[in-house]
Image (tube, rainbow, N blue to C red; front, side, top):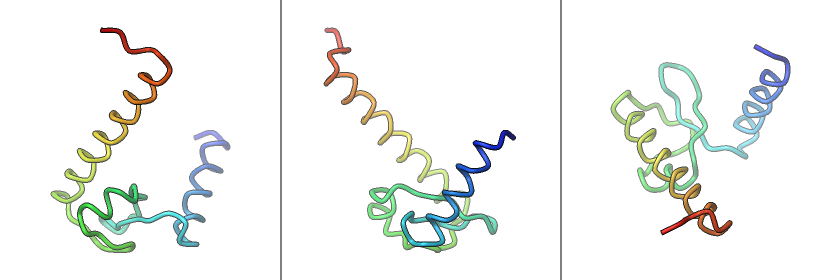
Length: 81
């Protein structure tokens, strides 16, 4: 893994440590989660989850990211009808 990626990952962990990023725990690993996903599913930072909840988090997160990309593209005039 290149040093830039390691620095990025270290920064993410610092942000979770300081409370800037919300996260859940799966199999002993902290996973940063979007605020809107945490709120919608009623999760709290540091909560342990199982693979079923994790799968739903992934689905919701992907839907949010896709929607934001579509909105951004539309605002940039990239959407054609």
